[in-house]
Length: 349
Image 1 (cartoon, helix red, strand yellow):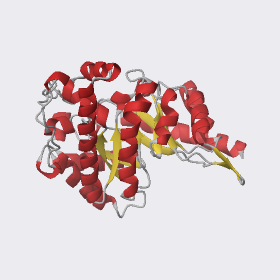
Image 2 (cartoon, helix red, strand yellow; image 1 turned 120 degrees about the vertical axis):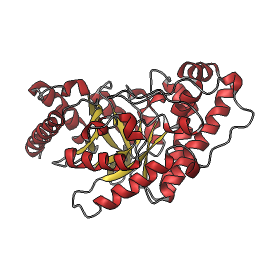
Image 3 (cartoon, rainbow, N blue to C red; image 1 turned 90 degrees about the horizontal axis):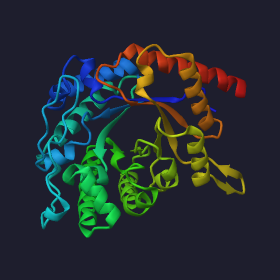
């Protein structure tokens, strides 16, 4: 058992606060994004940096969706869906990634940050955020429209999902072509919005295709991020070929452990084979409003230990940190959990 769990806080609009700008300013500037990512590394010393801020807007914006004006502390949102399922264009064409939207800013910023940190002994993984197929679909036709179409089995939602899967694949291809790593976010596909059965039948095959693309490109660590209570789809998430999945704070850690073991442990002649995934266990950001309380530390450490004691690699994570989050509270939480985890690991050994 490792004496040190990984560490991956969820830093998006909070990046902007680290350099004293608004999220709206940050998303429009490669220079500011590079500065913010370096500041994030220097502040949190995480194992991974995610190049992205308003991660679910990028693909829709590149197709022509308008964004609301960002406030001083929050990200913009898509003003209105581009289409309905009844008004989809007859031909849905994936745009040229290099020539549309903010894709170029994200790629260039990621390359610059990776190069700037390459001499750092504690250099993190630098990963570019990409939206998954269902989340893109909800931005293009609206969440309610996409869900109703999926539940009712409308032909047009599957045509749209075919397009959004191709779109996501094109963006991932552009990322790996630059010798960068990607992380796929598709939380719109999480239960209870999407039932486990619909996820398995309609979404998981598309995630499997995207994970296969990354694997073929040589990306060894392949994160697939779905928030919420995903206990009911753990086996399907593992089946996509993702190597890193999220046990969000809404999910019960013990039940998640059981599902990981049930889905991935194979008995061979030499004994059990370790699960093929790393799990990031998230803390509710609301618990980080002040100095960490001992019951919170103990409970979260118990969750980490539930994974690690079964041979499942585990990462300390957070839900999305708000713009105004105090970094010292996050760092104090991480340090206390890591310390308590090391103490328990020593006893366990």
